[in-house]
Length: 247
Image (tube, rainbow, N blue to C red; front, side, top):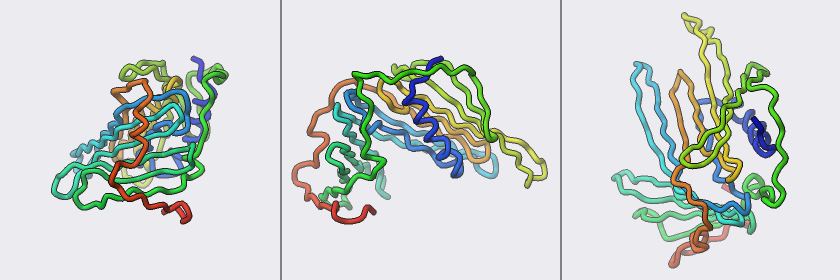
């Protein structure tokens, strides 16, 4: 299997993040901010199954809507609910071209019609590779490699909700010596990346101690979104915080 150089870069960058903290913390699936000439929109669904001490499980589902234009700007709509169960949306526009992000809420009776603009962090202000010069590919000579107590597997490519994706699974073996059973468990992080859209289309994180979290992108449409989606709505007061430190 051939893996593009940008894919390896993402995997190498994510590996310390995956294991530096507790693996029960979900990884935020990237919407591909900064990658140009590959506009799209889609729906991101995260399903988390928590394992309780008595062995029972609970399931939570979170949904976000995503847009990215040809210039690499992204819009995220996080669907949320008030304490009374009323649905509203938190919206974040990340603009690597202008070097800022914009945030406001729609449908929240407790929120004022205010849009806040903040300077984008270095991580948000990135530039993607030009599609006119496709990244070189390298051949992975081994399906499975191991290092530092971790095992990395290159998985057969597949289509996920109509998007071609290349997968990698990183497994960490943990010896629970503090327990009377001294059992051994495997904690896995599985990433499926789209070479075409340069986004993570599926992330599966499984820890037998806490549960499983799956984030997946669906309903992908490959077209440039309406430019109006990347602007604050009419009637909102724009509050500029770019001269202040980021919260």
